[in-house]
Length: 219
View 1 (cartoon, rainbow, N blue to C red):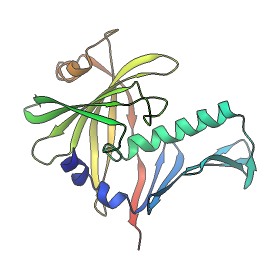
View 2: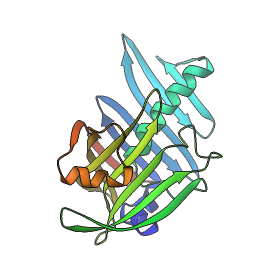
View 3: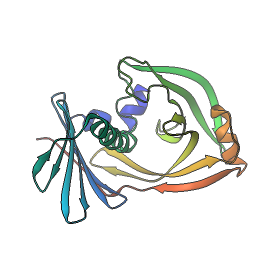
């Protein structure tokens, strides 16, 4: 996984600023000296909303005025912001203390060789979604993530399989979009979703596209 993180440029992302637009909403990620600042800019009605998540916590502003939110809403908005950033910057943070890596073995998808790795999370430090399970298929040639699958339980439980597309290099940091698939089976085996993908037995649910993506290293 360390080779994969290096191939994706996470050693550069730790000191810099990533900007992108996702589904019409602008996001930014800034990191420096162990500190982080995530922002989301959106419009609700006639109000300009800024969501900010950093080392100190989550904050929402409306037209530059801070809003006092109940804990339930604060946690919901924080989780949704963090989720977008998490997937946008994968595999950043997969070397964290709450991360458990398990090498499953070698696999092949569409004639290419992959390392298959399972990622789980400790309850302590693993966040509110610590029960989620991920599987990554890492290209043996360039060490980049071509595919991933995960199980989740939020308001409902499910499984997803993602195929990386539109990969580009932004000043040393790899940005990629995804085709997001779901299984037509009620309870598929997470590790076998690549087989379902090759057999065209997955349904394209959505496209994960990071528009106007850019990265600038700190000076």
